[in-house]
Image 1 (cartoon, rainbow, N blue to C red):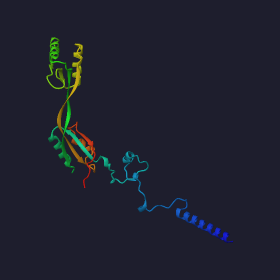
Image 2: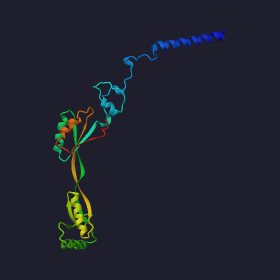
Image 3: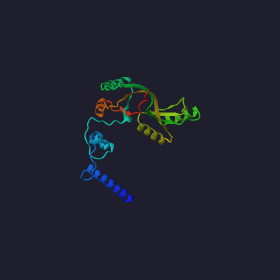
Image 4: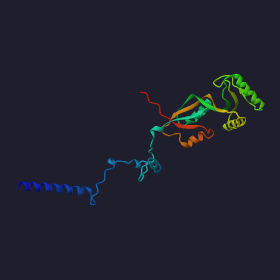
Length: 230
């Protein structure tokens, strides 16, 4: 009897619990709505449609326009290169109108400025001079014996701004059975860059294009933000 009594008591308890859950869920068996203050807000509900596509978030989009998703890896930028400090200062002044402080820095860099065609160095200066004499007999112009450096006793056949001119010169020398070489020439120059932080994206693409309208070679590059001290 005692076993039967407790079995019936347990079954009544289970039945009561099941009925309570049905009432709480509604007639269709769906769970009750979550109060607004406790509802989990999804990322797609904060994004405009185009932002949702960029973020790869599918589904319907709500619309809270004052929310901006910031990519923390792209808030620091470098602008340049400038060959003159005054040009860098003028751009910095335009950026400053957006309440963005840009710091100017200088850097020594190599600039390519031409192509040299030459004959590789001979063992002695006499051999180089003899080759120069042969060039003169062939009515070749614009050459000289190199007197110093790693190409000493070689023969320079001209310095060209464009590679196409250097290639033509090499072809001309091959017709005379010489074996010319090509060297890219560099020089050390000082260039200037502007570094600035823009976490609020104040300098957008439209304003940037206006600033660089007459500076087509200017670049804006993302950079690593400096570490905060303290």
